Length: 189
Image (cartoon, rainbow, N blue to C red; front, side, top):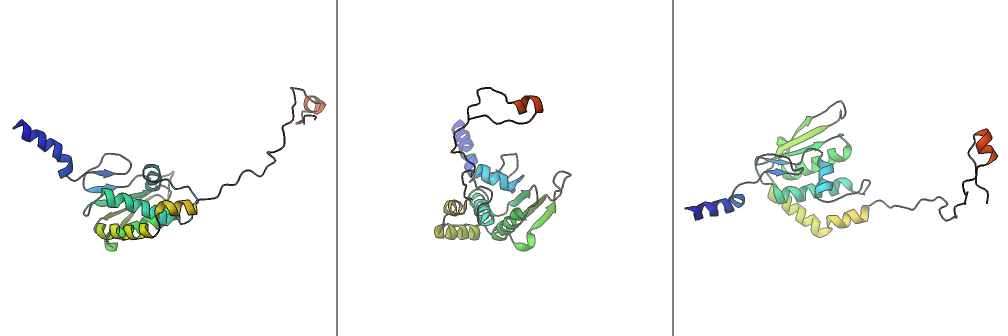
C-alpha cells in the first residue's frame, strides 16, 4: 500500500495539468497566465530583446508562442497584460491571440490606473495550440528568433566626444576666476 502511494505521489506531477504562470505567481490549471507585464516578463524569463530592435513585435510574438506552445494547453485561458498600452504590446498581443485563440473569443479589458491609464489585458481560451506550434516551427526553420534579434539589434556607437585627448593635470590649483569671480576654471597646460 505504501509503495502504491509513493508511486502515485511520484507520478502526480506528470498526470495532472500544470498551472502556468510566466511571472511565477500562484494560479490554477485553468489559465495560461502571461500577466502582469507580459513584455517585460517575456524578455526577463524567456529571451532578452533590446528595446529598438527591428521587427520587435514579430520577435515578441515568437517568444510568446514559444512559451505558450511549450507550457500551455488547449482549453486554458490565455491572459496577457500591457502596463502602458503601447503599440508594441497591442500589435503582438493581437498576433499571439490570433494564432492560439478563436477571434470571436478574444476579450480586451481596460486595467487602467492613475499611474497607467492606457493599461489593458487580453483574455481568450486557447483553442489552436497545434496550429500555433506548427506555424512557430515553420517560421523558426526559416529564420530562428535569435538570428532575427541579432540582425535587428540597435547599433551602439562609441561616444563621439574627444575621449582620445589626454586629461590635463590640475594638481589641485585654483585660478583667479574660480576663486574671485566664481567661474568654472580651466587647468593650465
